[in-house]
Length: 176
View 1: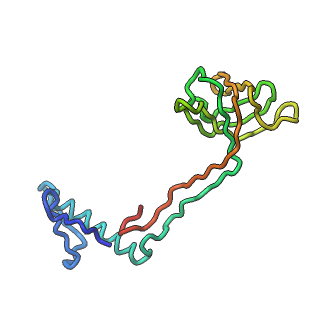
View 2: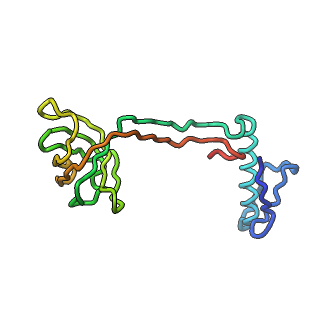
View 3: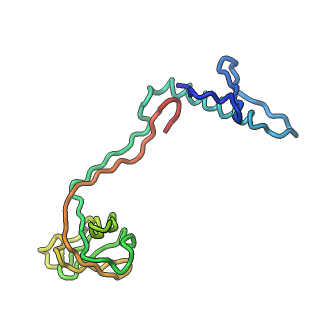
């Protein structure tokens, strides 16, 4: 579907017409290239892409699918107080419970908004050294593998997380 915008106005002067069957613009050596020539070259290329796309795909067709993922075992830990380092420094850190020995990797962070405390989103990697504990407990101190700082758990919560990876779709003559 061609653009309904008229580009044959200042400053573009794109007077491309599909009826003229132009497929190429020749540039003269030793003369500077004009903006109008470049604009028409872009329009010719876009027209060719659109013709191909219209032949191969329906409007709105998925060219490369976006991947949807759902994690129904997404754990968060709320921290008791401000940490010695910035909350973002915990991204990808391995946290180890001092009393339980449980290990977890930080997969996301959320800084405090004034009412909700700093939150770390984790994936448990290893049960505790006592072979009984499998998650952090409230009040437990955690050591970070990245900077050696410690944080104290106020509470743990289990929820869900969904993610969508980008895909490519054919829309109005463009692959977006």
